[in-house]
Image (cartoon, rainbow, N blue to C red; front, side, top):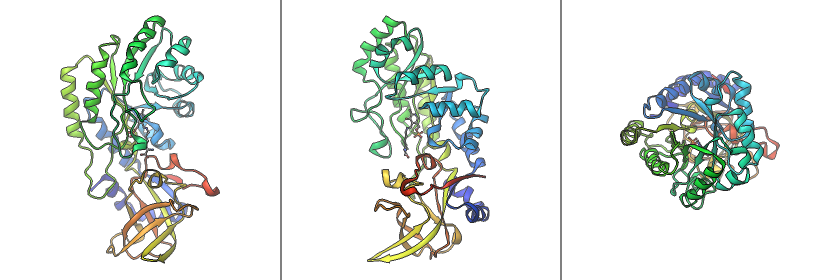
Length: 379
Ligand code: LLP
């Protein structure tokens, strides 16, 4: 049983109260988040962890992460400014900026607000050499094979826009020599929602072989992508095996620091989406259960076919005797939050809980159909 089930099951009464006041809403449980942060911190092999804040930037969530001592991985000026607004005393060394296909001004800003700036395109090093000259740069490499829960989130290989292909690296060397640019780190993030624990050590070996070309390399950033189980019966990422594989790498390459950028893993299970049942409809051989909010709050099922387990919080322990599609009020057939979900007898007014919604939930929501997405409540 996952941590998510544990925290919200024991807070069912409190959640029903929250639902009555604020539904539809994302609810985040800070104790669960703190527990997950501690789990990531058991990875002794990772010298530094930067939270990929794109996964969830609720201020209370960010505060809990900041207080735990993790750094932040930012991808836009908005994210950089938000971190400085919330934590004015933060050291720039705690911020890693990993933009892609952005204009020159964003790199300039990156060097003002973050210590670590990642570049994933050889062309910009030359085109905007005035920005990178005599500076430390982290290179984002495309190690060739993407992984992840859906093709949209596999961020390596020829079908992906990210990273510098190994064949371009001799040119990078030339440009760096010409403009006195120091490559101090190598980065690769191969994808998101990965449950195979050897992924990050494979990335580390790939980067280590490239580091021979860049003698100032002190760290290898093996990215984020640490998955959480979504489907019933799927196993969690085995952190122990992951740790062993990275420790093995460190034995062979002790000269490098290892950095990671977890997003989803830290926040997914600490967040749920609560929404009230509006209408129930039987049509053909299907049962549709309508809820107050749909793809405008949680687009992952429509965009990636993602699975979020769904429970009837109003009758949590009743037998599961109906099979239904859970749909929102958005005018699209794709507005489905759950396909063929097993639920107990359900009535209008019941609260449904959509699990594992803390990552890429609220941050990807929209006002489509001029409907406000679910708000956020922090426990
Ligand atoms: N580092 C970089 C450079 C990234 O691009 C990402 C995510 C991360 C770290 C964090 O990845 P995570 O640990 O969260 O998997 N919206 C999609 C996920 C997109 C991930 C984008 N990049 C989803 O809902 O599954």
